Image (cartoon, rainbow, N blue to C red; front, side, top):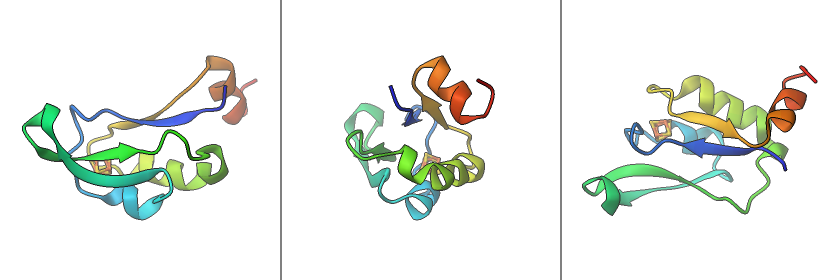
Length: 84
Ligand code: SF4
């Protein structure tokens, strides 16, 4: 299983930094009814996140509340980080 970027919307503050870094992954910033209609970042689960892994990495590094992470198999994550 390839990695996918994950946004913890409980923590996201809707700043749009991730959307600017990787718009094909962090496709939308919209009001989230599950969080008092605050603006939150939404990920396109169907796009190829690995293809823009550098950009996702930039988004992870620049997110002011550190709420973006990779999800996927441990093996896939370790391999992509050069640990496997
Ligand atoms: S950079 Fe982080 S806080 Fe800002 S919109 Fe993206 S996920 Fe949310």
